Image (tube, rainbow, N blue to C red):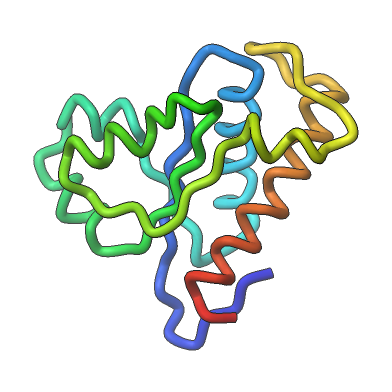
Length: 134
């Protein structure tokens, strides 16, 4: 669990790709945000489309962890294109090399995907703690 003295938020930005790793990224970010009070999530499509004119101001307020599904690092690229700083990033595909199972379904979360989600959530919490200095 993350405990920060100043209760500063940390933002997670998930891959939204239509792959099994994209699914794992989205669920891991969503679950982490639901479980921890100081975590928020960023909508990457909204950020890319600039659908909310104040989104950049909101996003730049907090440290960001980019959760990329693969080596293409689309989340990092989108944020960089919008001049938004990423504090840390992970590559779910690379991280899952050390997980006992690999997700296979891009649209439904089964047992394999749930194991991968929990594995990635632990990594997200560790990265958030690194940013928070805990």
